[in-house]
Image (cartoon, rainbow, N blue to C red; front, side, top):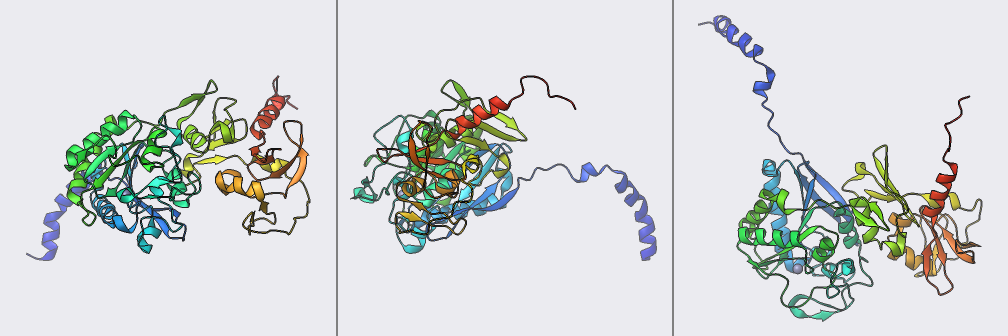
Length: 445
Ligand SMILES: [Zn+2]
C-alpha cells in the first residue's frame, strides 16, 4: 500500500475525529496551579520562599525549620513535601491553597544555630499576649531546647524580621502546621482552641505520632502556634521523633489526613465586633496583631467596599484590604493620610546620631529618639511609611502644644510622660468626609 492510499483510507476517520466535539478530548481535568513565591528575607538578607499549590479559598500553611540547624530535618521534610505536592498537585482539594515554607529561619540553618542571626529564638518571639491565657505570654527570658533558660525571646514581641514575615503571611490563613524536632508528638495551641485540638488529633492519628495536649516539658512563651490560634487560625506543632531523619511517610500521611478533612477542620477567618462595629476578619487580624486599640484606636464606622478594596476608618488610621496583594505584606495597608499633614518646604535637619536616629535614602528626614523606637517597634515603613518632616511643634488633638513628626501614613505625637501616640487622623478623615458629604443631590450645571 502506498502512502497515498493509506492517507485516503484514513481520511474518513480523520474527518470523524474532527467532528467529535473538542470537549471530549480535553475533558476538563482540573489541575491546581503551582507557584514559587518569595515572601520575605531574613535578617542577613537570605530569601524566605514558599511553594503554593492550588487556588482555593482555604489557606493552609506548612512552616518548616523555625529552629535552624539543629532541626535541619524539618527543612528536609518540608522540601520533600513541596516536591511531592509539586508532582501531585491534584492531591490538593479544589477548596484549598496549600503553602509550604521550607525554612522560616534560613540564617539559623546556614549559621549552624537554633536561633536567628540576631540570637533570637523565633518560636519565642511572637506576640502571644493576644490569646486568653496569660501563661504563654511573650517574655525575654524563655525555656529553650532541653529546658535551657536564656534571654532569647527578643527585645520585644514580633521584633524579628522573620517573625514579621510570618505574621504578614498568615494574616489570611485558616490553618498552620509548624514542623519541629525531636520529640515524636503532635500538640495544638496551648490556649483552648477547638479547631487546633481537632487538627492535632487528626495529624497524630495519621502520622503515628503521640497526641499531647501541649508541650509537656515547660510552657512555651511567644510560640508561633499560640500566636496563630490567638487570631483564630487552627495551629499545631508536629515534633518529629528524630533530629536527623525527615520522617517523610509519617508526615505526608498527617498532611493528607488534614487535607482530606480540611473543610470540617479549618475555620474560616471570622469577622469580629469591636466598639459595637463589625470589623471584617482579615482587617480585624491586622488591627489586632498590631496592637488594636492601643495603636490604631477603635473602629468608628462600618467597613465599605470600593473598587474591590475594603476600607474601614479607625480612630487613628484608615485600614484598607487589597485582595490583589494577597500573599504579600501589603494585603492590608494603612492609608497614607499623613501626607495631608506634611509641612511644606521645611528644610531637613542634618544631625543624626545613631542608634537613636534612623536615616533613609528615600527621604531627607530622619527619625530620632522616642519616635525612632516607636516607629521600629510598631511596624516601621509598613505601618507608618517614611517621615515627611523632622520634629515639629504643633497643636495636638488634645489641644496641647506638642512635639510631633509627620509620616506618610501617620502623625506621631510625643506626650509629656515620654510616651508616643498616633494622632487621630482616622477621626479627622471621618469628620472631613461627613462634612463634605452632599446632603442634597448634586447640582447639574
Ligand atoms: Zn523546634
